[in-house]
Image 1 (cartoon, rainbow, N blue to C red):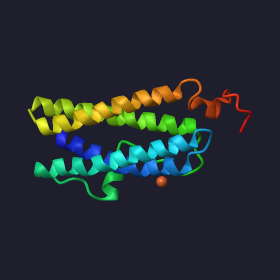
Image 2 (image 1 turned 90 degrees about the vertical axis):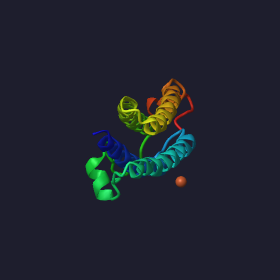
Image 3 (image 1 turned 90 degrees about the horizontal axis):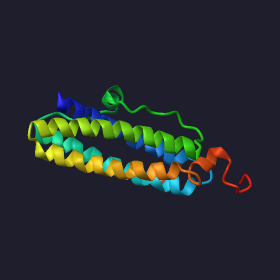
Image 4 (image 1 turned 30 degrees about the vertical axis):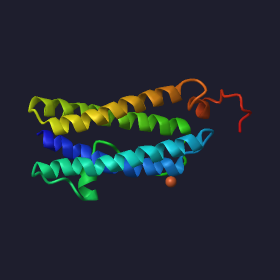
Length: 160
Ligand SMILES: [Fe+2]
């Protein structure tokens, strides 16, 4: 059951890595550069986790999902069609997807703790710790003077 969730998590990492590239390439607006770089840092982390999570399944004689078709079927993170995205849209999408990842990581961590699987527990505790920090970054970005200025028009920089 829990391994099934780990495969869902793996599928999400694959889809999220691609989606974060979409946001990385297509973000527009006042804080393009920081968001372009931020999404890059996130897809690097997601890609690293992608391999680690698959290997944890192999160590338990479980078959990790390994095709794009399987990822799209299993993932709970949805792709988005490419277009120009505002900074606000990017921040909101990253936040929503990160909350999805965080919730699933917590379920996997708790189920691993129940069966004394300390390796999975510790791996996912690391991911939860990372998401907790990133969600704080995102909340800070959304405050006045941050990403909101892209769509709120309140930054006082003359419409540039
Ligand atoms: Fe790039």
